[in-house]
Image 1: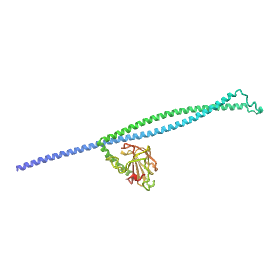
Image 2 (image 1 turned 120 degrees about the vertical axis):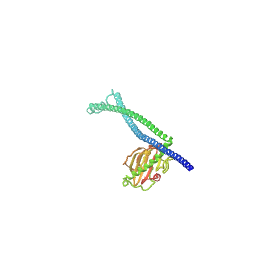
Image 3 (image 1 turned 90 degrees about the vertical axis):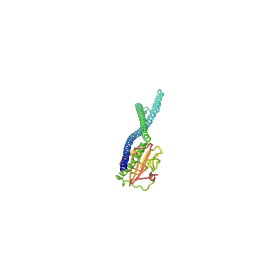
Length: 369
């Protein structure tokens, strides 16, 4: 009996110790789970903060690029105006030169013939047939007055043109200075954006959180397209495309990441393609007639546009630097929609391009040539 009691006590102690150990392990697991959730929350918060910073930088870059184009247009216009002023000034100078030469020749002729007898006196005509000398004098005086007035007008015109030229040169200098300042700001913003992504790439946990966010953004894009597709009102507006393979690519460039491939290890498979421009032409053209259904920033896709072509066909254009159309605008095949850029979560100038048929992704390489 005593041995039975001792055995019972031993078993009880062992089970109590085991229960305590398992309870401690369970608490440790729970604490680790809490720490993991907190860590994930912190990483998610950090990534969201970086994402917001990137979007703010992208918005600033969009504005600065718009200013850059405005300065370019202004400089081009001022150069044209200066060219016109120079051309006009040259015309006035030539007219002034001809007038001065004529006046000089007249003065020279008058001086040379000052003491010579008039040929009219030696004429066989009667005196009564001679032109009226007063009339001739009046004509001469009138011509001189007209010459003087023309001379003054030409001098005044040249003075005005010179002042205008100086003003245009000053405006051109200011525009170039503004453009240079704009370029410095652009470079600084691009550098700041690059620094943010370098920070993410150097942090293993942030990089992992970024990949998870990209997958989430891809799902959100699918949901957005389904939502836009349900709201479509364009089936009757546009002709149904008869066959694939006869559409032009939206950007002159090279497909860098193909359909259903990954842009980088760990990233989700693309539902479209990534195109890099191969020329200085960054214009993004619409592939077919349609209506703009979406035109604004969207998560890691940056400045994005969706065009509804009717009959269940939609095209997506992302990472743009500038959008030239707004929601509701009708567009014709080949019309410029945007300018390719690097907004969103990309480093270099890229166009992300999708084609959706009834909400499902379709390989753009089957549609475009």
